[in-house]
Amino acid sequence: MSEKKLPLGHGELLELAHRLPTPFYLYDERAIVDNARRFVRLFDWAPGFTNYFAVKACPNPTIIKLLGEEGFGTDCSSLPELLISKACGISGERIMLSSNDTPPDEFKAAYEMGAIINLDDITHIEALERAIGTFPKTISFRYNPGPERTGNAIIGNPVEAKYGVTSSQVIDCYKMAKAKGAERFGLHTMVASNELDGSYIIETARMLFSLALRIWKEAGVRIDFIDMGGGIGIPYRPEDEPMDLKAVSDGMRSLYDQIIRANGLDPVEIYFECGRVITGPYGYLVSEVLHVTSKYKEYVGLDASMANLMRPALYGSYHHITVLGKDKQRADHRYDVTGSLCENNDKFAIDRLLPKVVPGDVVVIHDAGAHGHAMGFNYNAKLRSSEYLLRRDGSVDMIRRAQTYDDYVATLRFDGAPVTL
Ligand SMILES: *Cc1c(COP(=O)(O)O)cnc(C)c1O
Image (cartoon, rainbow, N blue to C red):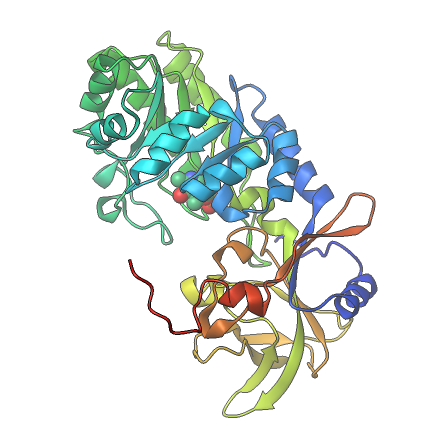
């Protein structure tokens, strides 16, 4: 069981929801920082341990700076993510470009920033060289194990995955990179998403440690860092158990000794690129109930929609919902909780048991701190919501203002005058 916590009491959250325009995101600074420290402490045995926070999970500069102060790097997959990292004071090899299908200007920007470039394909060795006019001293490759691993629901089967170099390409990748003058080498994979079974992560470590040994034997290249990717899950459902990260760390440590140390490959630095497990549980979407309607089913209509939080509609994901001020009431009413898009999968929950809901109630949607606001969009011309941070001293700062109509139409032309291209 995982307890569904709120960052403030029901009364305080209600007061906040009445003071600030809903819907909005609220993040809990203390919880994020404590969690980031716990994560790093768990791997204190690992040489050079670093988590490169996946910017896509929560691309808010205030959050990224907070994590930067805890020693985190950033993991980027686009030019704007690289630029946001730089603007947050993250620099050099604290930035990782783990892209795929990469445009040349991203390679160039990453190289100029001194970021680690993690290549997705054997052909990208030359694509990178063409883009930057030289070859970097530090290079990493993303490995796709193919039939060796089974993957999981969100990320899919590795054989079907567009990412990474195959088992038969990987040795040539390192040989080629070495021939082009690379001196520092990384090995990366990302074969799970929202995984709660820690043994899956340990098996990924076994796979990468063994592969580092193979690369040493067959390509004569010593791996300097192993990047385990992201993909550690969080308990979205109250009945889910969080991953036992202590057991993961212990399991990885013993494999490190058996495979890396025993073969004289120590030290190999250990990195992760986790996003979800760092901020996911500590972000909340707060929304007001506009309408409660009775059709062939009972509906609760919120002022938030899937344009604010897409995961339930996109993956059928569960997000826990708390009706503020009704925690003492029995959850004996069955509702579909919807947004206002002209799209019937615009639902935060289907057949969810909640206390009796009335218009004007405020609900908190839990575990929205990663891949939440970030995945938002503008369909139906819905405007993106604001984001707030509950500070350690109890104050609340706006860390992103809500999008306005003017923002939305800023790229549009209303005058109809032709533009010569
Ligand atoms: C999405 C992604 C991550 C982060 O995944 P989480 O589930 O948020 O931990 C890390 N690395 C890469 C390459 C990704 O695509």
